[in-house]
Length: 86
Image 1 (cartoon, helix red, strand yellow):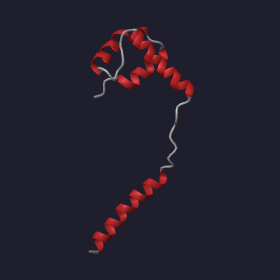
Image 2 (cartoon, one colour):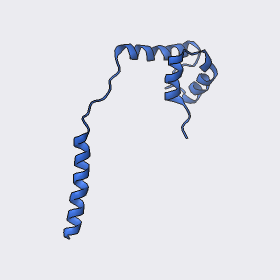
Image 3 (cartoon, helix red, strand yellow):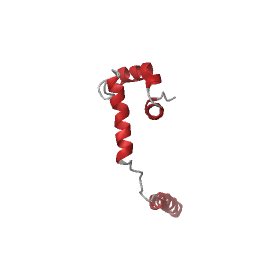
Image 4 (cartoon, one colour):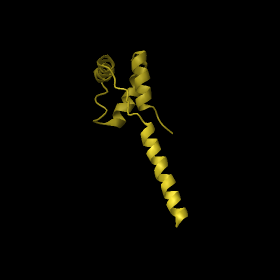
């Protein structure tokens, strides 16, 4: 019984220690970054891709077709968001 209690205590302490180490500071994007990212989606909309929330499969297909006409920053962001994951 003591062994079970000791193991439960150790598991609880490891979890509590992990929570304490996380300082909770998250990186919040600036207004400029958000405007730039919105601009990328607006550019895709003008190219005929529409909104990814409407039909993601169609959006990704369109993104693949117009990818080369995007700016480098938009290419980078769209690659991070919509690349195929294995």
